[in-house]
Length: 466
Image 1 (spheres, rainbow, N blue to C red):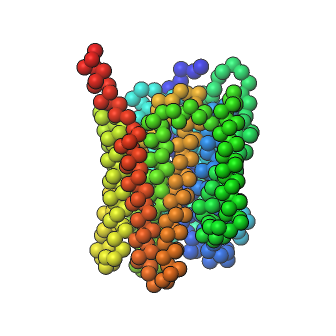
Image 2 (cartoon, rainbow, N blue to C red):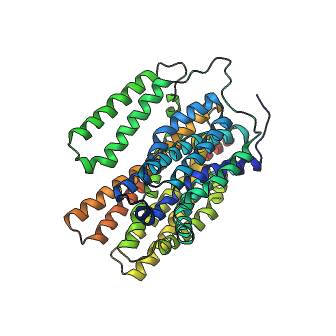
Image 3 (cartoon, rainbow, N blue to C red):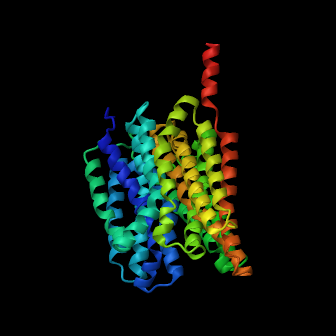
């Protein structure tokens, strides 16, 4: 067991790792039109290329977290960097759909390895008050990276080309590898050989993949089609088999005792729902371009307030948490985020008023995410035993990736259903699509209020009794 304590060099290296997924991996949305034209591929293929990274990351991240606990978090983080470089190069040199899709899959695997491993390293190497600070900067790379992705992507595509979205990932990943190099290894040291739960890996990945395909492809194949019904049956059977076997494993992939904590459940559930809200950008950005006449760069400018708000409030959420506990800033964050999206859903407004409402709404949503990020992450991983940190982090970040993926799918399905009935109802379709995110944010708020314990209140009661 090492007495090593994390420093800013390690923290910055981990931040770069998270940025390779949330910033560089997400910025592809700004390059969709030129990418489609240059490669001569259909919009459905490009849509798959955009979404498959989050899908692969989401279904693999719990597995990756469990492996990191057993094999070593530093080692797995470095492997994640290598995959990020390989995936980015494949995408950058692609001349057709094959290399592009393969590269995006590899980028998803990279994110799945880096995120839970780095969160577990924070839990292991940043004790006491250093941990909330480290989690704040980690969250800044995660939430902040996703917030700046549209603006960053639009600027890179306009100044250079869509290929540079991937080429720029390579030096960032190399720098991250260099900064993390030399960090003492962190893993489970039980004295016994750590076997990898291959059955758990297989059943969980296949179950989550089946569920995601139901949500994302249900409208395309038909909700009652044999394919979708088979996928639903596969999810139920595989997930039931996973739970049955995992309860009997000596070294399970996912320690199901984590879910005995109300606070952990609240963090995972609310994180899933709030990332569904983040999916509103995939409705908003195309709408302001096709429905309101903005260019990709101009639409990216709308998100400037969103970025500034997240950057300026993430550490505020941390400070509030240290004074009041996690419940208050998480509740404030979810409420404010839902209200911000509500302003964006006012698609009946004329252009000037709508752009103002959207800019303010995005900024308010950013404030909400900033308040929520660190308290939620700390609730999920800050109080679990170190030997379970990778698994706990993996489940928490799986909620992020799948929440965003499901948010895009459900919002898109609602919006498309309205357009199929009336092709001219573009404003109405966007409004209802964004409304899905408002509902998700509201349910997230309810989950926080019902499940997150008021730890500061309990501490004060104990002091009075003492």
